[in-house]
Amino acid sequence: MADISLGVLTGALIFLILLSGFFSAAEIGLMTLNRYRLRGMADSGHRGARIARKLLERPDRLLGVILIGNNFANIAASSVATVMALELYGEKAIAIAAGILTFLILVFSEVAPKTFAALNPERVAFPAAYVLQPLLWLFYPIVWLVNAIANRTLRIFGVSIQKKHATEVTAEELRTLVREADVLIPESHQDMLLAILDLEKITVDDVMVPRGKIEGVNLDAEWDDIVAQITGSRYTRMPVFRGSLDNVTGMVHVRRVLNLMREGKLDRLSLEQAIIEPYFIPSGTTLTTQLLNFRQVKRRVGLVVDEYGDIQGLVALDEILEEIVGDFSAKTMGTIENVHPQSDGSYLIRGTVNLRDLNRQLDWKLPTDDSRTLNGLIVEYLEDIPEPGTSLMIHGYTVEILRTRGTAIEIARVRPAAEPLSEAPYSSSS
Image 1 (tube, helix red, strand yellow):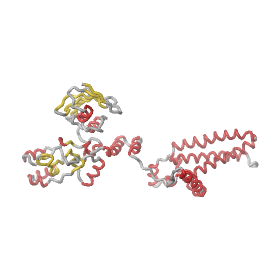
Image 2: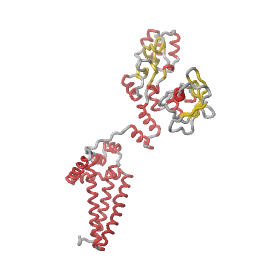
Image 3: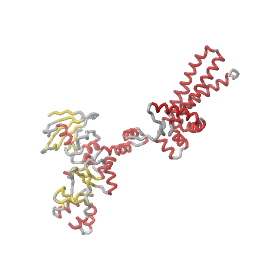
Image 4: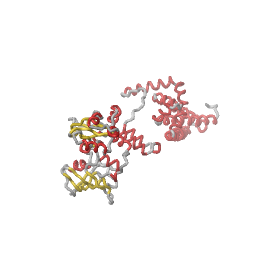
């Protein structure tokens, strides 16, 4: 290179430094691409995304061609810098040239391009894919040889190199993706998506109407009482039984009965003919499974039964949907008879109130792992029926027992904490 001008060597050095920077940026840009966005863009016809997706299917080959190009550029730049140092200042300048070149490569071939690529992966990866694809074809024999040696070395250590498949996303990872969507997904939509993911953790026992609160039609009652109950019901579907709920005969659609009444055809016989077979749901069924089951059997209401076949409660499709979209009834917590907000910020709550409903409608965080009602939560902690006047702290919420009836807590005053604790500490006093 003695007869090559200094200007040509300087130009070559600058080109090699930039070339090294290109390969460094391409590596980071392609490796930090959002795989799900890349898949969507590729499926929609984006050519750069399709090429990048194809390259990423074999990351060993992609990294092979990138590192071959990167190392070639760095070694060539080192050789050119050495020649320039010898021509200008002799052998004594080689060490200085090496130090300066190291600094230039570090800044302009590594840190700067890699940082830019990490911040703008798509702007770097897609154009780079157009260049890397023909380079991979051109240098495929070298890439294949390098990968073969590297992969065989990895196999010695028990690492198997195969075609890279799409990574499966766990539920927790998907929750993180939804939370980090920020302005891309409205907050209300985020809440619904997260609620759908949580359906697998919730069972029908958590949302069912308890057996004691089920409103049904007793066929053994007086006819006038049956008609009054049906016409005054706020539900569209009701269980029908004889004597007690243990002798359930089916379900009846109130609207169909009202149509019979309007036509003057309603009597005991027509009412019994309007009854459809009951639909039973095993206790412990997750809401995800039950939502699919409702769709499969074309039903909207089912009776929850335990392992002995005893009816424990009633679940309607509306309860499951409310877990996703929230309470869409016209009522508000202030008008529900079981919860009464007080002027001092506390709430008078009946012990039978469902904890999940309470948390959802008041944005509270009372623990629901072991209990379904406020009464169950208090008794679970105290392991006894408390006397009126007993106070306790549950998960940062102050609970005062105001009235009990028999073996259950009837009314309690609950004062929410300003910031509920992440753990569930308890304390009590009488």
